[in-house]
Amino acid sequence: MKATAIANANIALVKYWGKRNKELILPQNGSISMTCDEMTAKTTVEFSDKYKEHTVVINDEEFKKDEKDIHGHIDRICKLAGIKQHARVVSESNFPVAAGLASSASGFAALTVAATAAAGLKLSPKKLSILTRQGSGSACRSIFGGFVEWHRGKKQDGSDSYAESIVDKKYWPDFRMITTIVEVKKKPVSSRAGMSQTVETCPYYEGWLKTVDEDLKLIREGIKERNFEKVAQTAEFNCLKMHATMMTTKPSIIYWIPATMEIIHAIHKMREEGIPAYFTIDAGPNVKVLCLKKYEKEINKRLQKLDGVIKTMVCKPGNDAKIIDDHLF
Ligand code: DP6
Image 1: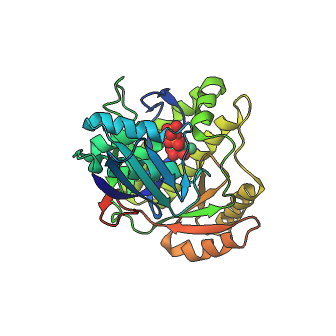
Image 2 (image 1 turned 135 degrees about the vertical axis):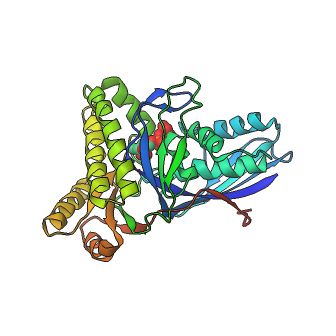
Protein backbone atom coordinates (compact mmCIF):
# COMPACT_ATOMS: atom_id res chain seq x y z
CA MET A 1 0.00 0.00 0.00
CA LYS A 2 2.69 2.43 -1.08
CA ALA A 3 2.86 4.69 -4.12
CA THR A 4 4.77 7.71 -5.39
CA ALA A 5 3.58 10.43 -7.75
CA ILE A 6 4.99 13.56 -9.32
CA ALA A 7 2.97 16.61 -10.29
CA ASN A 8 3.91 19.95 -11.77
CA ALA A 9 2.74 23.28 -10.39
CA ASN A 10 0.44 25.38 -12.54
CA ILE A 11 0.18 29.13 -12.99
CA ALA A 12 -3.19 30.64 -13.83
CA LEU A 13 -3.68 32.83 -16.90
CA VAL A 14 -7.25 33.49 -15.79
CA LYS A 15 -7.26 33.47 -12.00
CA TYR A 16 -9.44 31.64 -9.50
CA TRP A 17 -10.18 34.15 -6.74
CA GLY A 18 -13.13 33.45 -4.46
CA LYS A 19 -15.24 30.49 -3.39
CA ARG A 20 -18.99 29.96 -3.50
CA ASN A 21 -18.68 26.93 -1.20
CA LYS A 22 -15.75 26.73 1.22
CA GLU A 23 -16.25 23.11 2.34
CA LEU A 24 -16.30 21.60 -1.15
CA ILE A 25 -14.01 24.31 -2.59
CA LEU A 26 -16.32 25.43 -5.36
CA PRO A 27 -15.09 28.55 -7.17
CA GLN A 28 -16.98 31.72 -7.98
CA ASN A 29 -15.48 31.68 -11.47
CA GLY A 30 -13.75 29.35 -13.95
CA SER A 31 -9.99 29.59 -14.51
CA ILE A 32 -7.30 28.60 -17.03
CA SER A 33 -3.68 27.73 -16.32
CA MET A 34 -0.44 26.45 -17.77
CA THR A 35 1.15 23.47 -16.05
CA CYS A 36 4.86 24.32 -15.51
CA ASP A 37 7.41 21.62 -16.25
CA GLU A 38 10.25 22.87 -14.02
CA MET A 39 8.19 23.22 -10.84
CA THR A 40 7.61 19.79 -9.39
CA ALA A 41 6.40 18.06 -6.26
CA LYS A 42 7.23 14.41 -5.65
CA THR A 43 5.24 12.60 -2.98
CA THR A 44 5.33 9.09 -1.51
CA VAL A 45 2.40 7.79 0.50
CA GLU A 46 2.25 4.57 2.47
CA PHE A 47 -0.75 3.25 4.40
CA SER A 48 0.11 0.74 7.10
CA ASP A 49 -1.00 -0.66 10.46
CA LYS A 50 2.41 0.30 11.82
CA TYR A 51 1.43 4.00 11.73
CA LYS A 52 -0.73 5.21 14.63
CA GLU A 53 -1.56 8.59 13.03
CA HIS A 54 -0.97 10.36 9.73
CA THR A 55 2.44 12.02 9.46
CA VAL A 56 3.35 14.44 6.70
CA VAL A 57 6.92 15.56 6.00
CA ILE A 58 7.45 18.27 3.38
CA ASN A 59 10.98 19.22 2.34
CA ASP A 60 12.41 17.46 5.44
CA GLU A 61 10.12 19.25 7.90
CA GLU A 62 7.17 17.70 9.67
CA PHE A 63 4.01 19.49 8.57
CA LYS A 64 1.69 20.50 11.40
CA LYS A 65 -1.97 21.16 10.74
CA ASP A 66 -2.79 24.56 9.21
CA GLU A 67 -5.63 25.93 7.13
CA LYS A 68 -4.62 23.74 4.17
CA ASP A 69 -5.77 20.57 5.81
CA ILE A 70 -3.48 17.89 4.39
CA HIS A 71 -4.43 15.43 7.16
CA GLY A 72 -8.11 16.01 6.41
CA HIS A 73 -7.44 15.34 2.72
CA ILE A 74 -5.80 12.00 3.60
CA ASP A 75 -8.87 11.14 5.73
CA ARG A 76 -11.09 11.97 2.74
CA ILE A 77 -9.16 9.49 0.60
CA CYS A 78 -9.21 6.80 3.34
CA LYS A 79 -12.98 7.18 3.60
CA LEU A 80 -13.41 6.88 -0.16
CA ALA A 81 -11.26 3.74 -0.25
CA GLY A 82 -12.80 2.31 2.92
CA ILE A 83 -9.45 1.83 4.64
CA LYS A 84 -8.66 2.20 8.34
CA GLN A 85 -4.87 2.47 8.27
CA HIS A 86 -2.91 5.68 8.79
CA ALA A 87 -0.52 7.19 6.27
CA ARG A 88 3.05 8.34 6.17
CA VAL A 89 3.53 11.05 3.54
CA VAL A 90 6.89 12.39 2.44
CA SER A 91 7.01 15.14 -0.14
CA GLU A 92 9.73 17.16 -1.82
CA SER A 93 9.31 20.20 -4.02
CA ASN A 94 12.05 21.90 -5.95
CA PHE A 95 10.87 25.46 -5.25
CA PRO A 96 9.84 27.53 -2.18
CA VAL A 97 6.62 26.46 -0.47
CA ALA A 98 3.78 28.94 0.38
CA ALA A 99 5.37 31.97 -1.31
CA GLY A 100 2.72 32.43 -3.98
CA LEU A 101 4.42 29.93 -6.26
CA ALA A 102 1.59 27.41 -6.53
CA SER A 103 3.30 24.91 -4.22
CA SER A 104 -0.04 23.71 -2.88
CA ALA A 105 -1.18 22.95 -6.43
CA SER A 106 1.64 20.52 -7.22
CA GLY A 107 1.60 19.27 -3.60
CA PHE A 108 -2.09 18.38 -3.43
CA ALA A 109 -2.09 16.92 -6.95
CA ALA A 110 0.90 14.65 -6.19
CA LEU A 111 -0.61 13.69 -2.81
CA THR A 112 -3.99 12.79 -4.32
CA VAL A 113 -2.50 10.73 -7.15
CA ALA A 114 -0.09 8.88 -4.82
CA ALA A 115 -2.57 8.35 -1.96
CA THR A 116 -5.40 7.05 -4.17
CA ALA A 117 -2.97 4.63 -5.86
CA ALA A 118 -1.59 3.48 -2.48
CA ALA A 119 -5.17 2.97 -1.28
CA GLY A 120 -5.95 0.82 -4.32
CA LEU A 121 -8.42 3.26 -5.91
CA LYS A 122 -8.55 3.53 -9.69
CA LEU A 123 -10.01 6.94 -10.54
CA SER A 124 -10.44 8.65 -13.91
CA PRO A 125 -8.53 11.94 -14.39
CA LYS A 126 -11.84 13.81 -13.98
CA LYS A 127 -12.58 12.10 -10.66
CA LEU A 128 -9.00 12.71 -9.52
CA SER A 129 -9.41 16.38 -10.37
CA ILE A 130 -12.65 16.63 -8.34
CA LEU A 131 -11.00 14.91 -5.38
CA THR A 132 -7.86 17.09 -5.59
CA ARG A 133 -10.03 20.23 -5.75
CA GLN A 134 -11.37 19.45 -2.28
CA GLY A 135 -7.83 19.73 -0.89
CA SER A 136 -6.90 22.96 -2.66
CA GLY A 137 -8.81 24.54 -5.55
CA SER A 138 -6.02 25.42 -7.96
CA ALA A 139 -4.50 21.95 -7.46
CA CYS A 140 -7.28 20.34 -9.51
CA ARG A 141 -5.64 21.89 -12.60
CA SER A 142 -2.29 20.18 -11.88
CA ILE A 143 -3.72 16.74 -12.66
CA PHE A 144 -3.32 17.71 -16.33
CA GLY A 145 -0.31 18.90 -18.35
CA GLY A 146 -0.18 21.60 -21.01
CA PHE A 147 -2.96 24.21 -20.83
CA VAL A 148 -5.91 23.44 -18.56
CA GLU A 149 -9.36 24.84 -17.77
CA TRP A 150 -11.10 24.41 -14.40
CA HIS A 151 -14.84 24.62 -15.01
CA ARG A 152 -16.77 26.59 -12.42
CA GLY A 153 -19.72 24.22 -12.57
CA LYS A 154 -23.23 24.95 -11.34
CA LYS A 155 -24.17 21.95 -9.20
CA GLN A 156 -24.19 22.19 -5.43
CA ASP A 157 -22.39 18.88 -4.95
CA GLY A 158 -19.41 20.01 -7.07
CA SER A 159 -19.65 17.09 -9.51
CA ASP A 160 -19.38 19.48 -12.49
CA SER A 161 -16.51 21.56 -11.08
CA TYR A 162 -13.37 19.86 -12.40
CA ALA A 163 -10.36 20.60 -14.57
CA GLU A 164 -9.86 19.41 -18.13
CA SER A 165 -7.07 19.65 -20.68
CA ILE A 166 -7.47 22.37 -23.35
CA VAL A 167 -4.37 21.21 -25.26
CA ASP A 168 -1.49 19.01 -24.15
CA LYS A 169 2.10 20.16 -23.74
CA LYS A 170 3.09 19.31 -27.32
CA TYR A 171 0.55 21.73 -28.82
CA TRP A 172 2.46 24.92 -27.97
CA PRO A 173 6.00 23.96 -26.93
CA ASP A 174 7.35 27.49 -27.52
CA PHE A 175 5.30 29.10 -24.76
CA ARG A 176 7.40 30.12 -21.73
CA MET A 177 6.64 31.17 -18.18
CA ILE A 178 9.71 32.60 -16.40
CA THR A 179 9.12 32.37 -12.65
CA THR A 180 11.00 35.29 -11.15
CA ILE A 181 11.59 34.83 -7.44
CA VAL A 182 11.98 37.95 -5.30
CA GLU A 183 10.89 36.50 -1.97
CA VAL A 184 10.97 32.96 -0.55
CA LYS A 185 9.29 33.69 2.80
CA LYS A 186 5.79 32.43 3.56
CA LYS A 187 3.31 35.08 2.43
CA PRO A 188 1.61 37.16 5.16
CA VAL A 189 -1.97 36.45 3.98
CA SER A 190 -2.69 33.01 2.48
CA SER A 191 -4.65 32.82 -0.76
CA ARG A 192 -7.41 31.00 1.14
CA ALA A 193 -7.83 33.81 3.70
CA GLY A 194 -7.23 36.52 1.09
CA MET A 195 -9.91 35.34 -1.33
CA SER A 196 -12.44 34.94 1.47
CA GLN A 197 -11.78 38.51 2.64
CA THR A 198 -12.14 39.73 -0.95
CA VAL A 199 -15.52 38.03 -1.47
CA GLU A 200 -16.76 39.49 1.82
CA THR A 201 -15.45 43.06 1.65
CA CYS A 202 -14.32 44.16 -1.82
CA PRO A 203 -16.82 46.59 -3.40
CA TYR A 204 -15.51 45.72 -6.87
CA TYR A 205 -15.79 41.93 -6.59
CA GLU A 206 -18.97 41.78 -8.69
CA GLY A 207 -17.12 43.76 -11.37
CA TRP A 208 -14.31 41.21 -11.38
CA LEU A 209 -16.78 38.35 -11.81
CA LYS A 210 -18.53 40.09 -14.71
CA THR A 211 -15.33 40.21 -16.78
CA VAL A 212 -14.01 36.67 -16.21
CA ASP A 213 -16.08 34.84 -18.83
CA GLU A 214 -14.79 37.12 -21.58
CA ASP A 215 -11.18 36.52 -20.41
CA LEU A 216 -11.79 32.75 -20.39
CA LYS A 217 -13.11 32.90 -23.95
CA LEU A 218 -10.19 35.01 -25.23
CA ILE A 219 -7.55 32.83 -23.58
CA ARG A 220 -9.18 29.57 -24.68
CA GLU A 221 -9.25 30.88 -28.26
CA GLY A 222 -5.76 32.37 -27.99
CA ILE A 223 -4.28 29.05 -26.85
CA LYS A 224 -5.98 27.13 -29.67
CA GLU A 225 -4.79 29.75 -32.23
CA ARG A 226 -1.30 29.86 -30.61
CA ASN A 227 -1.80 33.64 -30.54
CA PHE A 228 0.74 34.80 -27.96
CA GLU A 229 -0.34 38.47 -27.77
CA LYS A 230 -3.97 37.53 -27.26
CA VAL A 231 -3.17 35.10 -24.43
CA ALA A 232 -0.50 37.21 -22.72
CA GLN A 233 -2.32 40.56 -22.89
CA THR A 234 -5.51 39.03 -21.53
CA ALA A 235 -3.63 37.18 -18.77
CA GLU A 236 -1.76 40.30 -17.64
CA PHE A 237 -4.95 42.35 -17.47
CA ASN A 238 -6.77 39.54 -15.66
CA CYS A 239 -4.01 39.47 -13.03
CA LEU A 240 -4.21 43.24 -12.54
CA LYS A 241 -7.97 43.03 -12.09
CA MET A 242 -7.54 40.33 -9.44
CA HIS A 243 -4.90 42.39 -7.59
CA ALA A 244 -7.22 45.41 -7.76
CA THR A 245 -9.83 43.37 -5.85
CA MET A 246 -7.18 42.30 -3.31
CA MET A 247 -6.01 45.87 -2.74
CA THR A 248 -9.55 47.12 -2.22
CA THR A 249 -10.53 44.71 0.56
CA LYS A 250 -10.80 45.66 4.24
CA PRO A 251 -8.11 45.50 5.51
CA SER A 252 -6.28 45.96 2.23
CA ILE A 253 -4.12 43.10 0.93
CA ILE A 254 -1.04 44.19 -1.01
CA TYR A 255 1.18 41.26 -1.95
CA TRP A 256 3.67 43.28 -4.01
CA ILE A 257 7.08 44.43 -2.73
CA PRO A 258 9.43 46.94 -4.43
CA ALA A 259 11.10 44.21 -6.51
CA THR A 260 7.66 43.25 -7.89
CA MET A 261 7.21 46.81 -9.22
CA GLU A 262 10.78 46.81 -10.50
CA ILE A 263 9.95 43.79 -12.69
CA ILE A 264 6.63 45.26 -13.87
CA HIS A 265 8.40 48.44 -15.03
CA ALA A 266 11.18 46.42 -16.68
CA ILE A 267 8.54 44.47 -18.61
CA HIS A 268 6.86 47.70 -19.76
CA LYS A 269 10.27 48.92 -20.93
CA MET A 270 10.93 45.70 -22.82
CA ARG A 271 7.61 46.07 -24.61
CA GLU A 272 8.49 49.66 -25.58
CA GLU A 273 11.68 48.24 -27.13
CA GLY A 274 9.67 45.67 -29.09
CA ILE A 275 10.33 42.64 -26.87
CA PRO A 276 7.00 40.85 -26.23
CA ALA A 277 7.02 40.12 -22.46
CA TYR A 278 3.98 40.14 -20.16
CA PHE A 279 3.49 39.30 -16.50
CA THR A 280 1.17 37.52 -14.15
CA ILE A 281 1.32 37.51 -10.33
CA ASP A 282 -0.49 35.28 -7.82
CA ALA A 283 -1.10 35.81 -4.10
CA GLY A 284 2.48 36.81 -3.38
CA PRO A 285 5.24 39.13 -4.60
CA ASN A 286 6.85 36.79 -7.14
CA VAL A 287 6.30 37.49 -10.84
CA LYS A 288 5.80 35.02 -13.68
CA VAL A 289 6.87 36.42 -17.03
CA LEU A 290 5.11 35.19 -20.15
CA CYS A 291 7.08 35.06 -23.41
CA LEU A 292 7.94 32.90 -26.40
CA LYS A 293 11.06 30.73 -26.78
CA LYS A 294 12.55 33.19 -29.28
CA TYR A 295 12.82 35.92 -26.60
CA GLU A 296 13.44 33.70 -23.56
CA LYS A 297 17.22 34.19 -23.27
CA GLU A 298 17.13 37.98 -23.66
CA ILE A 299 14.24 38.42 -21.22
CA ASN A 300 15.77 36.03 -18.66
CA LYS A 301 19.11 37.88 -18.85
CA ARG A 302 17.39 41.21 -18.19
CA LEU A 303 15.29 39.82 -15.33
CA GLN A 304 18.35 38.35 -13.58
CA LYS A 305 20.04 41.77 -13.57
CA LEU A 306 17.20 43.50 -11.71
CA ASP A 307 17.54 44.53 -8.06
CA GLY A 308 15.85 42.09 -5.73
CA VAL A 309 15.64 39.16 -8.15
CA ILE A 310 16.89 36.06 -6.30
CA LYS A 311 16.42 33.46 -8.99
CA THR A 312 14.53 32.72 -12.20
CA MET A 313 13.10 29.39 -13.39
CA VAL A 314 12.22 29.03 -17.06
CA CYS A 315 9.17 26.79 -17.49
CA LYS A 316 7.63 25.17 -20.55
CA PRO A 317 4.20 23.52 -20.66
CA GLY A 318 4.54 20.50 -18.35
CA ASN A 319 3.21 16.98 -17.87
CA ASP A 320 0.13 15.32 -16.42
CA ALA A 321 0.54 14.21 -12.80
CA LYS A 322 1.69 10.60 -12.80
CA ILE A 323 2.76 7.58 -10.78
CA ILE A 324 6.48 6.77 -10.70
CA ASP A 325 8.45 3.86 -9.20
CA ASP A 326 11.07 5.83 -7.35
CA HIS A 327 9.87 6.08 -3.70
CA LEU A 328 11.13 8.72 -1.25
CA PHE A 329 11.27 6.24 1.65
C1 DP6 B 1 -4.08 33.52 -6.79
O1 DP6 B 1 -5.87 27.18 -4.83
O2 DP6 B 1 -4.22 28.13 -3.18
O3 DP6 B 1 -3.07 31.41 -7.17
O4 DP6 B 1 -8.54 26.66 -2.91
O5 DP6 B 1 -8.12 27.94 -0.82
O6 DP6 B 1 -6.52 26.17 -1.52
P1 DP6 B 1 -7.51 27.22 -1.98
O7 DP6 B 1 -6.70 28.35 -2.76
P2 DP6 B 1 -5.54 28.23 -3.86
O8 DP6 B 1 -5.66 29.68 -4.55
C2 DP6 B 1 -4.95 30.02 -5.69
C3 DP6 B 1 -5.18 31.45 -6.02
C4 DP6 B 1 -4.32 32.05 -7.12
C5 DP6 B 1 -5.03 31.97 -8.46
C6 DP6 B 1 -5.04 30.66 -9.20
O9 DP6 B 1 -4.12 29.84 -9.05
O10 DP6 B 1 -5.99 30.47 -9.99
